[in-house]
Image (cartoon, rainbow, N blue to C red; front, side):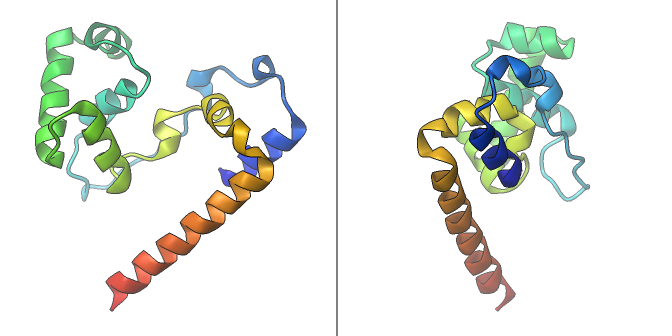
Length: 139
């Protein structure tokens, strides 16, 4: 993902030349080890887009009350009081990946001020942090 983002930033694409946001989302299948159900992950991922419960329900063919229930259960399972906190915790615990909640176009817009070199540097720092975390859990 990082290489693709850096390549796209260097190419200076026109945002209308990228696929539609929904076509860019990277879907990954989770094993049985995750605490969230697939529906809870779907609902939580759509909250990042700033959609209302009714809008999320419309996208997922369910009622706004069902959306509220799924969000409430996801928050409880993750130990979060707010949806945004649940989203952050889900990302940290790898219940969700960034590719599941944001399109390449959205990521490009967010990272554009950093430039390609800045994105590379952030990626290197994150990889170093992950390596340290893995090493500490292996001990």
